[in-house]
Image 1: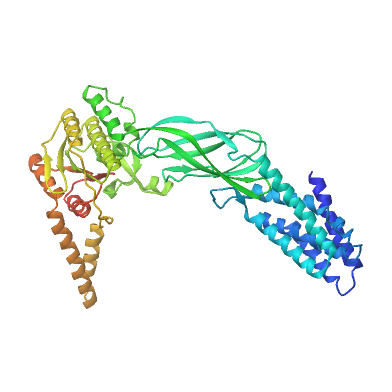
Image 2: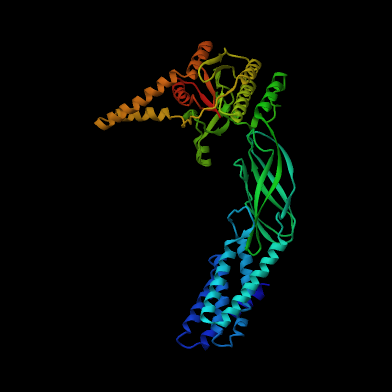
Length: 512
């Protein structure tokens, strides 16, 4: 097949060369220029679309040049060998498509419209010039396009594939990679594109070329608590010539979403019933446990982990950091002896946030209990401190966490909260400005001090600060803090308290 198209392209070159030799000297420059363009395009292909348009143009150009050398009835015959080249160029164009214009109904593609416009334009010009050769050439190419249209509309079904539906059981908020098998319903070659209207479904395989065999599509699914039970994908099919596009829908995955709170409650109950440490599933895969590894401090070296905000610079493993091009902290095999205060904000914005909050509370309690870290609870809502406890044992901690989860509330607030301020940076800028003796720096320092005072006053009036102080009074010793909050009404207060507690020697971790 490659040899055949090689011969056909050589034929075009010979035809252009023949036209250049036999044309009058005044007009021979035109076939010579077309010959140079054709050879250059053959040697260096800019794009499949340009190749299609070049071959399409050559069909009319060869017809027009030979109309001066042959009778007008026979001139289009010289251009007929270019039709297979046009056909092959369109197939290559369709195979190379990487993008598409989504439409809800079957419709002609841009390529089809461009070719049709070119054909009609050439036909109009040939009729005005009374050029019979070009009229015949336009009729031939129009018949060719009409035949392709009939073949495409007859052989391409509305939905070209049948999905093999699968069912997956997944924890809300977790990510699952799945592979969907697609069985072709036609042996008519076409390019398929897929997209999802849900932002929690990512289509990794954007394009496949469908022929006779089974194909597959890779999906990444991260479902929320509430949502459809079936994942719907929109598909777009473009025929093997790239002339028509159609759309279809498939539902390849049936979801069984397990609420995080329900799963965490089950874990907590298992823990309360005396499940052996290390046998609780998925605990090692949670972000909570990874964050709580930051409490691992001691004398004897245990291993390395990725640096987390608040880690001492003395514990940085510089050799490993240079090797992996990121900060690596040393970890020790003894847990820091001081207890932890679990600071919990009960306010969520919707059901999904409430589910996530409940999950984080229970998993944190279980993780601290397994690690043997003594902890107390400091719980607050939008206005008041709800609960503070003294230091609890592991079983007591999990039991209280189960009670706290029942107190979670949903508060729909139209206000949008900005990212928490960087208090450490604010104080650093104030200290730098105080060292500069100039009027502008003093004015800027006053503004930054005013911002700091506003943050200080806001934090003092926030229930999160009151909860910390009440819990601290019951512990009466140095402590660490685990923050479990969605950072809504307490965002600025928590940012300020994190700064002040870190300066006093407490290790602060935020569980998101």
